[in-house]
Figure 1: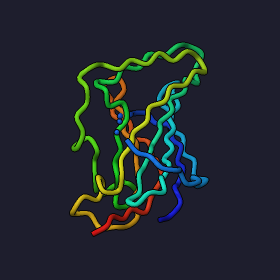
Figure 2: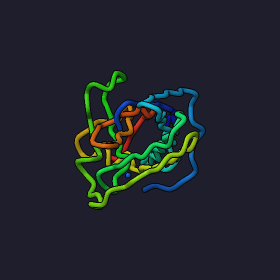
Figure 3: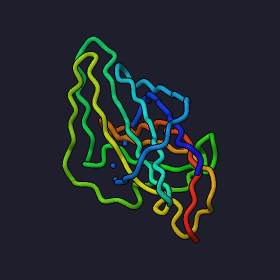
Length: 163
């Protein structure tokens, strides 16, 4: 299995699961996306077990001089998407179609310079299921702050499952 790829991003719009194992060293790709005063980044660690397990962590950092309040619509602060192409235009799998989220608002208060993190976990079997082929997929972390959708690129991975 290919080593995990690290991706960090910040976004103008944004959008949680479980794994174990020893993480592989992430790659060097870093992406940042900014929405107002908040900078968002995403990092995906690929675990060594087979089928591969993924842990994606999103960090929101207030880069402005005033406090920022962010409200998410439910307990799924961050969800994962897998795309079949590097441009992330061909959606192959959306975790939102496969999870149930608590129906409680999640509120983050970010003082100037402060950060908060949310983590989502899944595995190759959940993504590929019985229909998607083994191969390389491009990931995105999806957040839904304040009624918007923000998608943060989160690296790429080679996925395979026993067939």
